[in-house]
Amino acid sequence: MNKNIDSKPKSFNSLKILCILSVIGFVCSMAIDSSNYYTYSNFKNLETIQDKLTYEIFEDKLENWSQLGIDTSKIGIQKISQIYLVRCIIDILALLGVALMYYRIKLGYTIYIIFQITYVISPFILLSSFNAKEIIPLSTMAINLIYVVLFSTQKKHLI
Image (tube, rainbow, N blue to C red):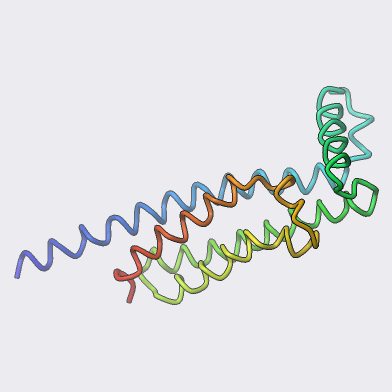
């Protein structure tokens, strides 16, 4: 009987660790996505700040995107900022799934999977092109899909 009691917390520990790592990742993603949203939605205001280096970096990025065929007009920049806003909202909803999985609720897994996949494909849907991989790197998208696989391996611990 003691073996069964001891084995449950050990098997659940891997799920807890994965949830904690995922929360840390969400905090980083939220910081990046929200700062990108703010930057691109207020891009023209960057000209007036003292730090010209920041403005030049974003201007170079926009020039590179323009050469790749991405719309960098005012409307295009607004679309890019909207992508980051949508990703922030999806982050929050996926975080809800992680919180539910932390408490071993199976519905959390479904919520998490739906919103992680939405998180990955949303730039492609909103931009209507495959140039989204230039705005959101494929390596970033791969990390989200790796977490989907990792949580799928822990699905058996959910009730």
